[in-house]
Image 1 (tube, rainbow, N blue to C red):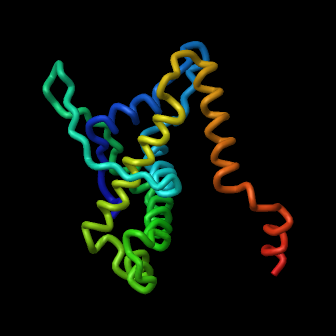
Image 2 (cartoon, rainbow, N blue to C red):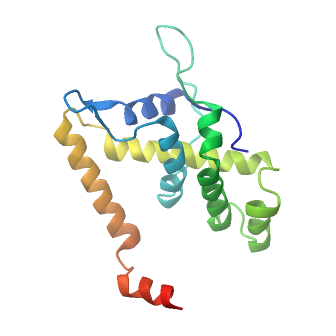
Length: 177
């Protein structure tokens, strides 16, 4: 697992392309620098927002080929530690997928990657995360300032939704133990 090329397909490939494209011709600013950066972050966003998505095979009408965006194997391997951490985290926390705690622990650590359904579940969060990122950061934007405002709004929403009750003092107290 995480030792070979990864391929986004269909509408998710198109969305990854837009997430990694320059939105400002003058500064060449991008929301994500590379496809692998989207791949690393998308499953966490998908999981936190409770979004999964089925594999999509939208075709390019000009060529008749399914849209694809690839991440070369060496990039996946180079990022495998982060990807493995994300996979394990999702397998441990996804009580809807596997209600039994012992089985979740086995999926995350002992039997990692043995069940193709686990990898598909992870990939569905990747696709769902791509959808969330696209909807929050790209959809409806058409000028550089709009992308920046949408990014700011997304970060602010994320902070309020997931971090609003975390206090620095609590973190410091945990570190002091």
